[in-house]
Length: 402
Image (cartoon, rainbow, N blue to C red; front, side, top):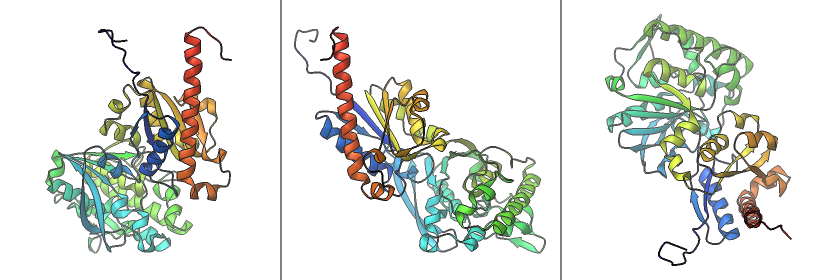
């Protein structure tokens, strides 16, 4: 009852649905839509807020486009030199660039990496996107660096932005990481002067250095088609690139955690553009105003395709759960499958978990039926919530459940 004596209906339950992508099945937006439909079926009258998330990889631009950014598309050089149309997001003086839009694995011919492309794929198109954003007034550049096809240390990006590289025989325009073996000198005099007044943030979820057994080539090269021989060559090439960059800048960042992201693109951004490397999910949640979205929410549903050990280190569900917990909301996770103990998840702010494997144990069928299974899982979450609330209400009234 309100102060004027009128009886007011109870405020609707507010649920924020904030999954990452279910890789191989659904985008983050697709997963959020399926969960929202199931919740509305299970709890008529519920207010569902869809806020799909990304951690710097695929879906990063899509995430911020839902938060007031506008899409900008232009033709750039793809990872092997063929033209591709890439889209980034712009709002005011902030641009969000997904490097994979210009130099990702799916931008390779046929979308399939091999040993040749592992050594020749370039980030030149990423530099073109940054330059275009600067042309349109951007002075804060956010680089999402997941899904790359490249291992060139960001050298292609640097050349596209005006840097010049030299070998012993003359000017060198590197076509991928393998060409860096012959690099001798880096001239930064022609680097776009607008970068001096711009801030650059690399949003990533890895902490690899540039070189060595935990470096960009050794850890991620095989995923990009590199044979063991090419991995060794690329690691030496990145080491040579780091030497040349250190001579030109007076500082050596090759061991800094995270600079191995996207085949060393993060190294080039940090060493040459002064980029700050940030946790992708934390920074993007901040950029999209997620704390305000979950303020006052009763329940937050997080999720991704596979909840595993890697998920606990900077991935979407855990980052979202941390913000939700600070807002006082309960958190339920949904995953295709999970290998993480429920007790560990509770320690990270996730109160409960449901997996699609509980409904369909066959992984291939589960992926094919992801929409249907997510909707059904959301209905089960709604039933759990209503039962919990009934039990809580009985407890508040001092009664026992029948």
